[in-house]
Every structure is written in C-alpha cells, then in structure tokens.
Length: 254
Image (cartoon, rainbow, N blue to C red):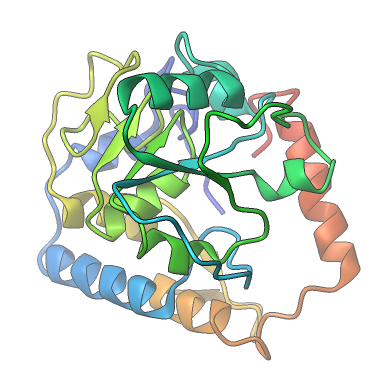
C-alpha cells in the first residue's frame, strides 16, 4: 500500500513522494538493509506476480526479454513516449538489435483476456513465453527492454541492463538506459541500494496477511514466499482485476 502526498509513483508528469525519497540521503544502515532485502528477493525468485510457470528451453544467443504490458494502464498513458504499444515496442527492439534473441513475455492479464494489449503478429520475437516463471526467466537473459513495466525494476535488482522507452519510476536516475522522455527534475544519481530502499522500504506500507498487522518488507517477503501464509481465494483475484480496470480509467486509484 502506498499513500503519496505529492503525486503517485506511476505518474512522471508531476513530482511524487517516491521521487523525493529516491533523491534523499539514506538513513544509517539503509544501504546494508536494502542490499540484504535485494539478495533475499532474488534468492526467493520473487516477482510482482509471483506466479509459478514453465521453464522452457530457450534459444542460444544474446537474449533480450521484452515484457508485454496492459496498453491502457495508467503507467503507459502517463509515462510512455512515442512507443505506446507492445507491437511498437517489439518492432523497436528488433530494429535496434537485429541479431539478438528476442523473448516476448505477454502480460498475465492480457493473456487471460482481461485487459488490452494482445499482439496479433509476434513475428518480430524469436519466442513468445506464455505462463513462464518470471524469476527464473530473469536469470536466463542478458538484458531487458521495456516501456514502463515493473519487470524492468526487477531486472535491475538482478544486475541486468535495462533499456526504457518510457518513464517508469526507476528510470532517469542513471541506472537505466533511457530512450524515452524522463523528467528533468530527476537529477539525483542514487546507487541501486538507495533506489531499492526508497522503492521497497521507505515508500510502501505492508500488512502481514497472517496477523493483519503492519509489518516490515522483510516479513512481507517471507509471507509472500510461503504458500501457506498467503492464500489467494477467488474473491481476492477478482478484486485485483477490478483494481486494474479502475486504474486504467483514473489516476487516483492504484
């Protein structure tokens, strides 16, 4: 859960509290804490959707992962540049990397037919990865290209080069290669632990699904990786989809 008194993290058209935190000095011990949290996230293979999936054989070569996005998502509407669709993104990646192995991973909600963003012609990709284990996949590729996907941030956690065609919250700070428009106000140059501390420790608030009490990000991660601690009844899945639909229509719900 985030509560932002300045803006919201996915809207680069105005300042946000997250931007302020990213640009601020770390508290004592903050860098070490962020580094430990990053190590635990990567060791657990935790990702945004945290869904188990296939681990297919992949073509050899310079593998570039291209995550698909929901095309009416607020981060696309507010943070994309000239490249605004999954098809345009794939075309750009292929044009700039003619000899690379391009792996396209459709967004889970798009695959389920719940949100727009399906690519009818995926011929520019060498392989389309449906229902694939994202944590595993990030360990198999050499770089990631994205518009504004959170998967780009997850790639940074694993030390991968990330190219952004839009302005996600993690772009413009010197940690990504930015080919899209990023706000001029993002002048700070944090290292990765400073970015992680702002994004995962200082900015959000966490709720323990077992005790229903506020908790640390470290405990939240342990719960997330324990299938017995985080049941996902159908009602929660429906609520998550409803949130996504509302997010595509207003910048105040996220």
